[in-house]
Image (cartoon, rainbow, N blue to C red):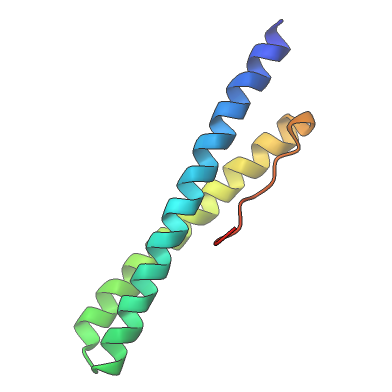
Length: 87
């Protein structure tokens, strides 16, 4: 019974992590677009702000993927798939 409950809880976490990965991926894309736009305008302070934000978000994205991978190792029967942007 405990294994079933653990797997069900893992499914919930996988769903939440998947949504968070999609959201932060979209946010990173927006920040990178803003940084490129600032570069085109030679607005370096704005570029730095958006570039730094995108880097911090990317670090968070890597951590979310690490957590998803850990769930996959712990619960192989769930067959977790890492969501890809624009899927």
